[in-house]
Length: 151
Image 1: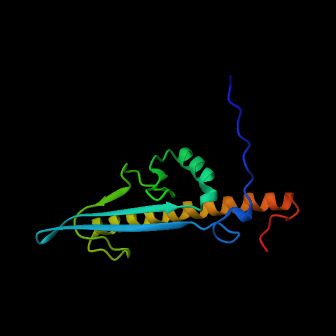
Image 2: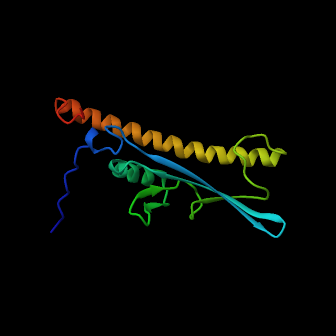
Image 3: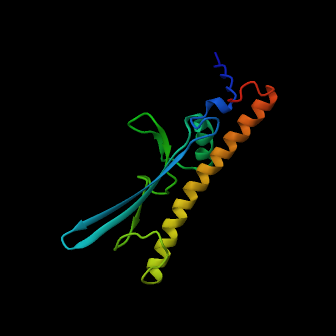
C-alpha cells in the first residue's frame, strides 16, 4: 500500500526563533597545529546553523547543491557545512590563516581569498535561507489575513 504524503505545515512568522524573523548562526573555526617549533597544519571550518523552522528549506537546498556535510549535531541542532571536503575542514598549507588579504606572497594571497570566499559562500547561503523563510511566512500571513503575525 503506498504511503500518503504528510501535508506540509505552512511556515509562519511565529515559527522562527528570532521573534518573527529567522535566527541563523554562522560559526567560523580556525585550527592551527604546532609541532615543535613550527606550524604543521592550519584548517578552517565554517558551519551554518539555520533557524530550526528553516530546516526543510535548508535540506532541499543542500540536496540541490549536492552538499552532504549536514545533519544533527550532538545537541540535536541541525547544521550544515558547505565545504567540499567531507569532514568540513578546509586545509591551509603552512603558516597560519589571516582573514585580511595582505599576504606575504601570491600563494598566500590566493589562500586568503579562498578562505574569505568559503566564509562568504556560507554567510550568503544563510542569508538566502532566511530570505526564503521570511518570504514564505509573509505569504502565509497575508493569506491568513495576518492572524498569525506576532504582536
